[in-house]
Length: 229
Image (cartoon, rainbow, N blue to C red; front, side, top):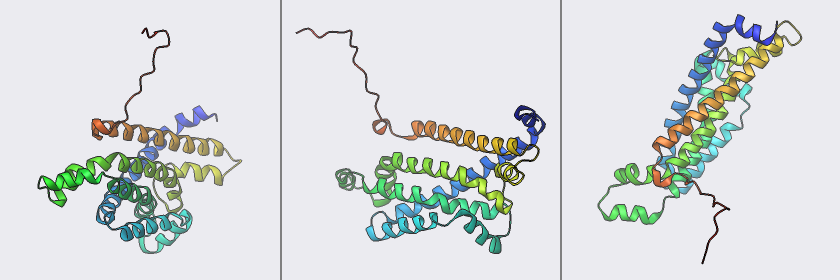
């Protein structure tokens, strides 16, 4: 069976697994973004706490994915829940780190000016600091999304949802009928999903990043034009 024939014969299954894969990534990233940004906001003013938060999230990222998923089987069982928990843990580091860095690098002159006009800490955070730090935070979310998209394939190891089943089934039956098709379809599907998600986040950034913070396009001079004194 050719790759095209395999796609046609498994169309319903592949569409369902693609939706599942996208869904588990969206849920995991939503939870990880909420937790990571909150941790960054609570710790960025205290260097020791922010260093601890970044170090702990970095340490969690060093745990092998198979080992973490295996450890989660005991308390959480198989399926969707351990997959989401593992993905949230792995997604935290770039979000926490970028939130801390983005907020810490806000120009102190701007925060002093905000205090000078009577802004409280929460209002200053919401209207001055967070909008200025948002491009850096969003960059962390993009990195985490790409990481999570790939790691989500391993969730099939614990019965999780997604395209990982195609890859695992293909590799397990390597040399058998349609084994290569399964592995290729699963891998390419994850890559395409990752590109799509990144495009969505880029467009979202253009809509949410203040214009003054957006990178400006540099016009290239026209070499045909000459400058006359």
